[in-house]
Image: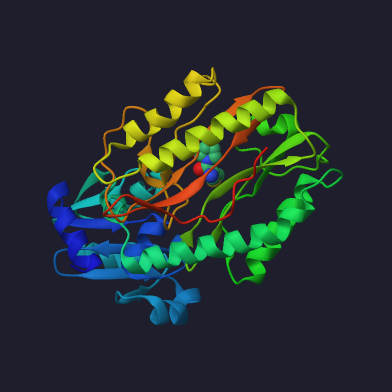
Length: 348
Ligand SMILES: CSCC[C@H](N)C(=O)N1CCC[C@H]1C(=O)O
C-alpha cells in the first residue's frame, strides 16, 4: 500500500473523513516536501493536497508527490474549505497550535476532531528505503566521530568538540540532527548537557551524544569516553552502564514489549545500585523526527516489530559527580536486531 492508501485506511480507523496534517515530519512523510515546517497537507477520501507558499513553488513541484496549492493563509484555509465542507476532519491535537485551530474553525464548515498519532502510527515501521537513509545518516556520524575522537582531551572546550562534530557532519553533506551534547566531568550528570564553554580536564568522563540528519532521516548515538584515568567510582559506573546497554541490545527481538526492554537495562542498573541514577527511559524510535515512536518506557506494552529503528541508551547520572550514557541505534529485524551504530565502545 502507498503512504496515501495507508493514511486513508488510518483515517477510517480514527473515525474521521479527512486529516489536516500540520506536523512538519508528517507533512514530509505524506508529500516528500522537505520544508515541512512551511507546509500543511490535507488528505480526504478523494483528494490529497500539499499547501505551501510562493517561496516554495519550484521546490514543492520538484519534491512533492501530492498536487500543490500555493497560497498563504487565509488563501490556504479558503481553498481547503471547499474540500472539507460537511466532513469530520481530524487535526493533529499534539501539533496544531491554538491559533491554528481557531483559524480552521473560522474558515471551515466542518466538524473538527482532535486526533493523536495517526501519521506517527504509520511511521513506526520503516520501509527499506527509510532504513537505508537512517543507515547512511549513522554511517556519516560514525565516520565523523572517528575523525573527532582524538581531539577529546584535557584543555579542549566542550564547544570546540561539538563544533568539529558539526563541521564534519556538514562537510559530509548532512545536517546536524540536534544540539550536540558534550558533557564532561560533573556536567555529565545532565542527560541533555549540550556543549558549553567548559574546558575538559584530566581524569574526566565525557558524554558525547550527536546525530546526523540525512535527507530528513536522523541518526542518534552516544559514547562516553575517558580523558586520562577517571576515578574508580566513575569507572565502576561506566562498566555498569555498558553491561546494561549490551544486555538490552542483545534482548531486542520482534514481539518484545518496549517496556520489558527498558526493564532489562533498569534491572541491571538497579543491581549495581544505580536504579535511581537512570533518570530517563531506555530509548525511543528514530526517523524523520529524532524522537518518535515507539517509546521504550517502563510499563509501555507496544510490541517491537521488524522495521522499527530504536535507540538503546541507558545512563547513570550522579549530581555533582558526573554521568555516563551509552547509546546504540538499533534496527529490529525478523530474526532479532542489527546495530546500526558501529563506533566502538571504549574500555574505561
Ligand atoms: C534532544 S535530542 C537528544 C538525543 C538523545 N540521544 C536522547 O534521546 N536522549 C538523551 C537523554 C535521554 C534521551 C531523551 O529522552 O531525550
